[in-house]
Amino acid sequence: MTTERKTLDLWFDPLCPWAWMTSRWALEVAKVRDVDVVFHVMSLAVLNEGRDLPPDYRALMDRAWGGARVALAVQEQHPDKLADFYTALGTRIHLGKEPNERATHEAALAEVGLPVELADAGETDANDAALRAAQAEVTAAVGDEVGTPVIRVGGMSLFGPVISPAPKGEEAGRLWDGFVNVVAYPGFFELKRTRTVGPIFD
Image (tube, one colour):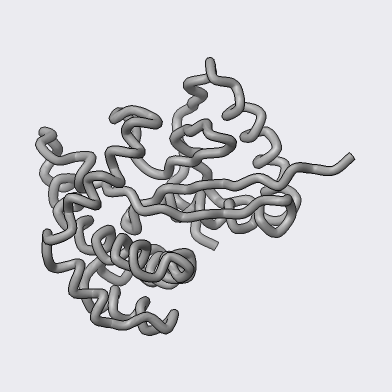
């Protein structure tokens, strides 16, 4: 019996460590299952506009704009390079603890052979209408009570999975098998338990 090839659409904000963990799992899934991973940009800064947030989280959201703006510029102008750019940028931000600012964006762009001038997008709100539209697509799919990552499979979308550490090899494949079954049921909304660890990067 043949297995139908699936597309895993994943929305991320470059600043979110949980989206990073899920994206690493998704790329592992692509190695062991008939799955194509397609990345899309969303924006935690847009999602949290106008919300009453603790000062530390508000400062984090204020810093989130730049990376999402640059990632969106890559998505619009060089969509075939978005996955590579996200890997380069996420490695710097989450593993290298580099700040989400222009120098980091430029280094990630250069690493994957993209024009460093794309970093200009991070310092202007000129394309924020498109960023808000990208976030609106996510909100329409899963609501505004969740953040990033968001995954779509077979036309059905869910927030998550939130995982740490990201499983590898066949373990990643087995998690995918279960996730596909869950997301396929339109009446499914939530599974959750208290998170006891932070992002474990490996």
